[in-house]
Length: 79
Image 1 (cartoon, rainbow, N blue to C red):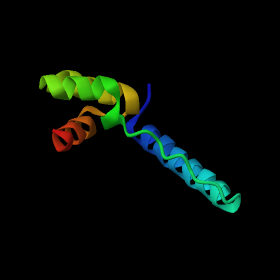
Image 2: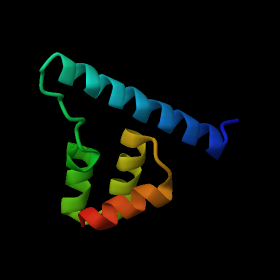
Image 3: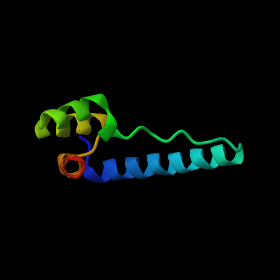
Image 4: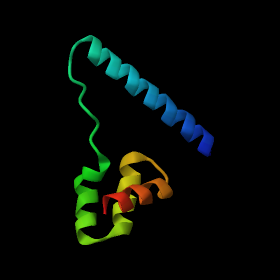
């Protein structure tokens, strides 16, 4: 069973890996390809256009792996 603390540790680790990767890109004098914004994904955008908040939140959760509260906040901000 995965605990909230385990998820936080993993998210922090991924964040650090991304920062390291950005550093490598800078050292190579290459532009870093920014991660796609999950709000801009076709699934989330279609649900927002339809006004289907529940589907938008579910899609956002699936794309990002965040919890319902974070997804709801992101969708609320996008709407």
